[in-house]
Image: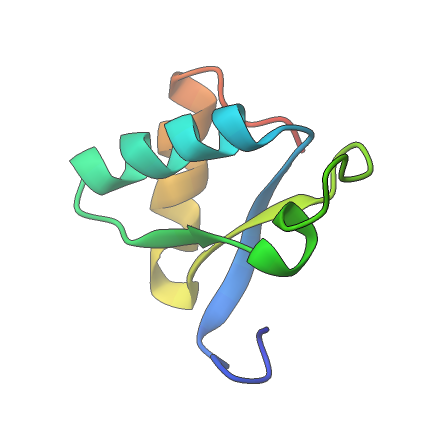
Length: 75
């Protein structure tokens, strides 16, 4: 995935899709675009910690701070 989007970096990993979606929503509320790596999300039961939340490189520090403040940083 990062091969197609070289500016995207790993921000956090999640064990379930609902938590990853909440994290994306929290970042979106702060105008930080984020995506979940859907290559693994398409499986019925993804392995624990396998959903990767990706953000732009220049948003990484702020995104991790927002997720940590919200108790959403599982990494």
